Image (cartoon, rainbow, N blue to C red):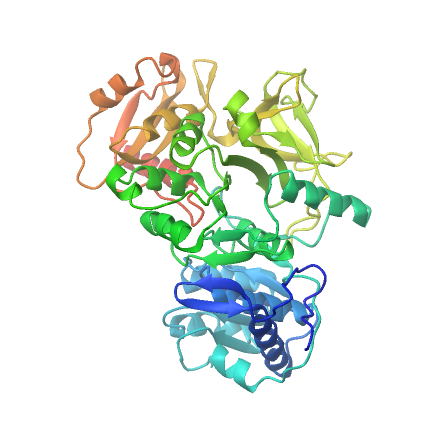
Length: 514
């Protein structure tokens, strides 16, 4: 029997015809995954894709992504992960910025993309599903490709573009690292991330519904497969369908953003009680503020299986909290992983005492060297001794546990007092009639700034400011309360569920001028 050759980095079972991934009613075996990737790599190579090339991949979270990633890895090329929610002209910015030479997409109609990207002169544009002039179908490339055995140590390296929450996206090459460390150190760091957080192991089934243009989706897909587990893809997030998938597939591991958990908790008790979710033993939240209130409510539903993780595209994973730690310190973000150094600094960059609040700076084995086309990281982002400025506010306690309050750019200074929007957002989000909330600082003649809360209610609900003020009683100090509320149809978010506060700020300014 031909041996699977993605490498010792993957842990296939003895039976290569066992399923490694599922999406809906479709499955992919270890053997089929490897063979399809070999054939796709062969066809891409014949069309001029070679080692070191950058291949734009614009795809939902789906089975085909696994085949594409392994095929690109076999060619020793790099994936440029493009957000499928971007319009073709918006995605052109990324493709041009990164100088891609080929593209693989799953647009329902690739025609607009072909027209928008014509200036790039790509060697090939591959469509996963839909035929169109100027594209080739992925199924045809797999069918015609040669079954050449091309080893690969892992899935393809990635260039991830920032979410655009603060401005134009920037490409972070996850393989181009700032620090030169021993391979054994980097491996031990990754093992700390994986196994300190119980994130892998044979027999595990991991639900993947995070986007593949963000670092977490690809990373946890690879983690699951590297440690002998299998994955179940959910192409588009649906709260009730998550519960259905957990029951149907015996999901043991799920990595979610807090917005997903909020939407599940907004389901009626009758809907939630339909499903047996007892197989789940690891539910990790991250990528956005994960409030104590939300962690508590999620624990009530799923049991003591809640973990929290903190990291950044530019640094890799930084810290994590287990259920045991969260039971003692519900607000904790967690202990730093092995080979991670934390330093909390003031506005001048000086380290503050234990327990004092400041900016979180971090040194990890996985800090990137710089952004695509923008040179190395500057002194505003990384210190001479290698500490990266995260832009987050927090403190470290006497046990070495990290606590995060908010983004520096989101912090509101009202009458000389620091107000962290995440605190009031956490309270408002627990109201049963609230679907989403975002708090920003707006100009105030007397206090400099005051908090304004944008509130999105659940469909059909009617809510007033007075009702929300009453809801705040006894939950939060009054100086932290929003001074006004705006009820809007939808809070703008990116594909990871992160609120686009710059959009809200711009909207507020435009309305104020009107």
